[in-house]
Length: 341
Image 1 (cartoon, rainbow, N blue to C red):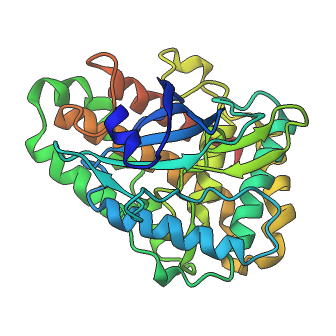
Image 2 (cartoon, one colour):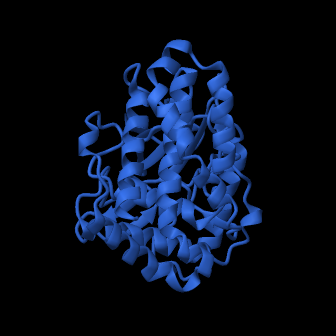
């Protein structure tokens, strides 16, 4: 790893390089190096190129977004990649891994779970600030880093193909979950038929993709920009509904604990709309809440497809992990349906 860090910095001493964060996809390290007598921290990441098959496109998107934000009256910190000594934003090592470096923002904190409605409001407001700043960006400048990422019809079509070649034992174990997905599949057609405008969208609005001031707990920086690409606003609002309102995280095995919390939903709606409300088209505003059900069922489809294929996408800790996640998301989908009826 020290050899990789040397590609980005001409430093005197590597103080530490320790795993950092809880992300599912990339490997992240907090690196501390001694420069000119002082110790400075950076984030070093190894991109999962099995997920992001065009790392150069990912970095181009992030650079374009950072440049756009720098030209706005943007009140948050900007996550801009740091170039390697070669001038490139990526370094490819001898075994084919792609590495990059970002600033490390001191005196900030992250959360893996939304604990209070006030926290939901501030996080949604933070993502709303980000969305508002990107409102004037031409989304066509950005390349899809995961084609079809939040394309419900494409996810459904892929899921049906997976069913034909699924691991037999896993398909038998997931019979009820497969049936529930297919029973509710029309929501994907409904959202696709709305013809919502394409925007530059974050696509992964979990609370742990925001940095907060460690003292004031105000949003400081939107992070994890790998999936910023063209999409619809329901993606970001829907993922906040999915991850902010659930009383349990998506790995919870006891689905009786999985429930949509209406005070959290109301708070996140207020926070996001306080920034974006005036910029939404009528069709966007009218269908925001349906985005939660759409995105949650889509996530269930993704977990279930991965389980049936043998866990090739998401990191898992035990054989049925993705099936547990599927059941969890389906319970949340049912809870949303009940509360929003």
